[in-house]
Amino acid sequence: MTENEGVTGRYGIGELAEAAGVSVKTVRFYSDSGLLPEAGRSPGGHRRYGEAALGQLRTVRQLRALGLGLPTVAQVLRGDADPAATLAAHRAEVERTLRDLRWRQAALTALAERPEALELLGDALHAPPDRDALATFWRRVLPPRLPRALLAAIIDAAVPELPTAPTAGQALAWARLHAVVTDRSAAAAVRANGAGSCGPRARLYYEGLGEAYALAQRPAPDAVDCFVAAHAGAEGAADSPAYRHALVGRLTRPDPYMGAYWDHSAVLRSDPAPDMGTLHAGLVARLAEEVQRAAPQADQAGQTGPAA
Image (cartoon, rainbow, N blue to C red; front, top):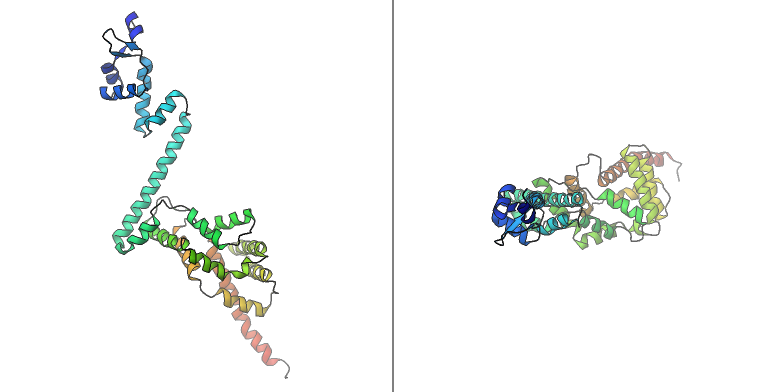
């Protein structure tokens, strides 16, 4: 490098642009934005740049090619932002954008097949789908004084992880599920149907249900007994054939809102393990079978008993 090059910088603006593979207009813009250090001016007043400017220009071009905005690029160049953390945050943002676009694509595909679902899908996808709406529904349904850890565990078990690359069918399932969980009257009806679980023994009731579901998932033979004990304990009742018969009558009455919730959430789930709704329905079915098998025996015992 000559003495003059050391004072004024090696590159003129055109030379710098050519060395970095960008346009003169781009160099001027970045320079005016304070992203490129000038080494000085030529005798004619033209900008001159050194090797540092070339390296910085290449870095700016690379970061911009990855989609980072100029303010963020400037923070990285000034040392105000950690490059690795900045790129990780940008990658997460790109992933969120791609996820939102995939949901939109799935909804458009669903609309091509079901144009009458425009209102349903439009209402559900006005914001990116997330688990918050589902969690809010469960907070409205569940008793208000459950211990925080127990409440979190129930919600985590009841709320499915949403797919990142949904199908058209999953977009429709989300829209239908969203319609249920955002309907406040649905939450009120579900909570009213579970009045026995909202009393002072609510914590014991939900802990008992959790134990019964865990046993049913194995499956264990005493899962039904544990299931009945959770209900009887919450109601302050004794487990008996008469109680089980009455319990089956209550539990087999259809709840359209919860039925819809579990049906639609099952479409969204990728976990092959049975969800809470499936385990609950299985326990109710097993209890109903046991009660039905016991009924003829009770009738026979009554017929062979001592005469009045």
